[in-house]
Amino acid sequence: MQQVGGAGSEVGRHVPSRRAVLLGGLGLALAGCGRPEPGRQPRSVERAVGPPTVGELLSRPRFVVAHRGSGDNWPEHTLTAYANALAAGADAVEISVASTADGVLVCHHDLSARRVLGVDRPIAELTWDEVQGLAVDARRWLGPSTPLEPVSRLEDVLEALGEDTLAFVEDKQGTSTAALLDLLDRQPRARERFVWKQWAGAAQVRAAKARGYAAWGYFDEDQLGRVEEFAETFDVLGVAIGTSDEGIARVVATGLPVMAWEVHLDHDVRRLTDLGVRGLMCSNVPYVLRQAGSTHDAFASGRRQPGDLPADYQRIGWAAQPAIVPERAALRVQRPEPTSYLMGSLADPRRAVSEVTARLLWPDALPAAGGAGLVVGLTSDANGGDGDRGDASGYEVVVLPAGEVQVRAREEGWTGAVLGSAPIPPPRPGQPVEVHVTLGSTVQVRVDGVDVLEVADARWRGGWVRLAKEHASSEAVEFSSVAVVHA
Image (cartoon, rainbow, N blue to C red):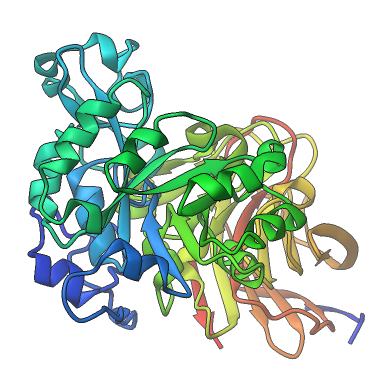
């Protein structure tokens, strides 16, 4: 071994009872499981005595609203998503509403049916009978084993979730305000449990306020010049997570409760909390609210796990998701740009990662330049950074096709000096390479069972791991058998 010196679940389709959902507050550990994984304890959620109200929610120092029903975990805007998000600890759900051609209000976000329903037509041109023949298909985002879900009528969802469920409801098309308010008016405790949601610059809020509903107005950073106007109109202000710290501080300074969207990461929660944001419109509820991490990947399940995210999801959405290949229990990364995949499901916020093991292979051809490997010991799950390998500090352990393994410093999101390198047998297409990294008093690397490198560096011992593709070409690299040991 060469030594180098250096610087010192899912609930399923049934709807839980109101008591189970709203009073139990059990955090589901993994999508696709019916109960928490051993070692990952449910999260207890404090609830007020009696049915919750909007006023009680907005008075809390922190509250969590499931964005699209927590769309990182279940097919968005489905009854399955809403019910599981509540069971995972969300305080409320966000429901986007669209009207069909014959006036049926359904739970759906996009103006088009193309992305989630597979039909390139506006929802407003489809009848309810046509929509009922379609299914919500989130397999491209959540993995190939994700079940198809039916499109739900809003009225059916509200009845199924029960009168103790709090919801932020939006007329997404902007043309069904009266019909939507009429439907809300018919629900028990309507003004105690529904918040009208809309883009802050739209005019529909006047109708909702006239009927006695609290309202949440959301806006981007380029509308910050109108924040005082918005503060006079709404009960809660919504700010995009991409807004600068200064911009968010300006919104918080209005004194109104502020809720930011959309929250995916532990880093998001910490940043927003430090800035005084109280509400989290969260797409990743089980991950954000959990207490412990897993120890092995779940690629064989064909389902993406809570906290596992491609690096460039904010820029390109569903197209960023690598393919999960359950028959090989692998993750296949083939985007032409350098990128990474956060294995947030393996992180435990209370403990650092002391060992990481993974197999990687180039199944078809080796890249002409650049390699692939692990980014370990990361101090946060923050996205971005050089090469999209995380905006945090840690170590890059990279296998190069020419037959070399390198350990590089990763300092505040930037790839720094090579701390050490060692020769290894050159990998061949289709041949897996097993990499084992130990983070103790030094950084030790073992390749295919052989100790090859030890670096005397102990600066970073964080709890997050990323799978990294650094070559700027389209040769696929597959990762499998990813496992960690927590210190």
